[in-house]
Image 1 (cartoon, rainbow, N blue to C red):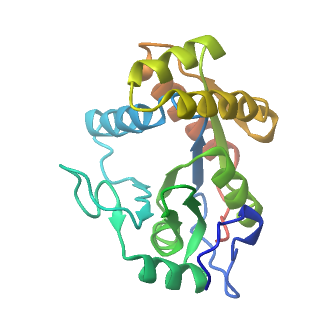
Image 2 (tube, rainbow, N blue to C red):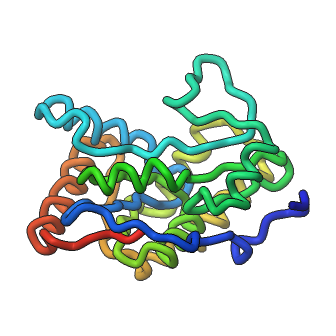
Length: 226
């Protein structure tokens, strides 16, 4: 395994053996450009489940990473923190649905395959929050995955959100804005599009829950192969 920059086309992909999930259990991919509010939406979905007594019904994928934990981050909750060697070994064994290296920083991130399989076999829906490129890779492997694309009310509003975070240099911000515009042009690749209006994250989470419920009703016996 070399340390040269990662090309998305080189993802190891699906292993030789595949597993079928329980009838009706779904893999739901929630994706969208940076700054659209994916993390906040996930928190709102979890809160809805807690309020409605549905805790534990879904499995939320915890991303693996080789970067160092930040203050307050908990292993297994925020991320699964791994050594670079361990990560690349797991990737070579096709243990990720997708994996990519953040250029310039040398940190790897990946969505572990094993917990997703276990949850689907147990009959639980799986929620995978991921970027647009990663969603493409997963969909190529898991054709039955449900893709939900989160969009902002407008590009200008998205840019305002990115600027308000004040966590990046001017060059980084410009690159994110350029990438966001390109990613938003790929909405047609998704099964559903949900607008995350500013200050209306609870409404966004409700819309996603409704989509999932409708898909269950429409395909009660569908089995996801991973």
